[in-house]
Image 1: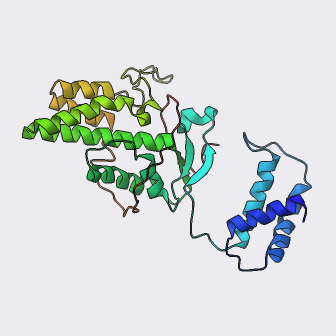
Image 2: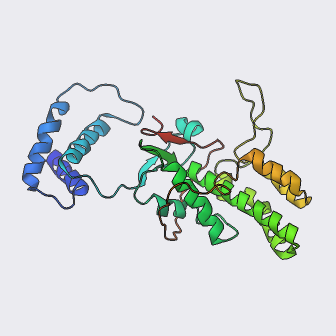
Image 3: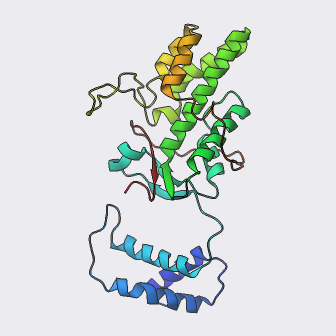
Length: 281
């Protein structure tokens, strides 16, 4: 078997670990589908997709067509958002939102972000899952974008905890919540995307208005808590939209997720985002 045939056989084995037909028959059928492309003249392809990427994609597509629908869809893609797309989708690896293990991977991403308790952590994560996976179109988001939402949910939880504890006269709990808010600017989920949070960030080219950076409301939130300004803190919670994944309740059943510790991240001072229908290309 030549090198190309060996590579195709490896791809077949990876895509269909429990084949329903003979490997030799499968290999022959795959080659019959992709061999014409190998003899076509090369055509220009998008960034990071050379001829080798196109051929490999054809092999994977052909193998997928020959096998039954996969019962497992991996959330992790192993594809990192290119620098030229960071301003659109944020930094880090692209995650499939429809991944079978999306819940556990999301839990892993947020394992280092402190929450007041497990209930608040679960509330944010479950609502994110319900919101991000409700569509039928393939969608992806970067780890930087996902960690940003997890961190904002945590900040909201600490704001709510501080307010409740302060109103109830629980000084120890109030002090703990304030300490957590003061520490938030140093969380890697924050510094990865916004190392210097500012309420008056870059000027919007279209409106001429200075918009907050990704975590631009955080300094004002901390100041309001330090000043015992509960009304001001409530206004900041509303203006910042940090509580969108904490105050609202999930609208669909969430996937269960065991605790996990791995926390991939990347650095870039930009507003992360979510992409649908194939990522950031």
